[in-house]
Length: 188
Ligand code: NI
Image (cartoon, rainbow, N blue to C red; front, side):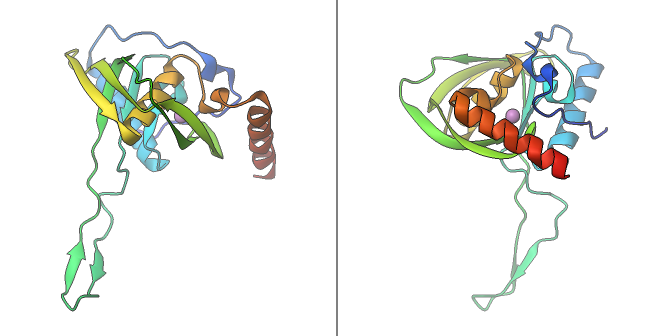
């Protein structure tokens, strides 16, 4: 297992259209494990393989990225000495994902991206959809998604088609975001 380097905009590799997975082997399992390590280390909630330079249609998502190893917080405000359990990880793997039946209803959500660090902007997307995908064994699944999961899967699926969330913004807002990113990189 390894923490991989995350590619950042405006690296042209992020515009790659990723290729479907057709071999569900140990190499794929290693890639997925490395993607989770990388995503958790960066405190992200989703990661596409192209963000670590691998042009395959593979996504990992965990909407509750709290560290399982974190010490439970002591709490005695109600006179009882009990402990809050740290949030449990809920890792999800999507191979060859497809969006079906996006809802006509849309919703705006403030998005960010590990490949566009420290930039956040409202993006409007269908508020619900169905998703079809394969698991690590190549078995097909289908499930309706809404709320943050719908936002996240649509954002991550965009990565597989070479699209970043800032590409959904107006040209002006997009160039402002890229300038801010360049400035922050120079300052670092
Ligand atoms: Ni992203």
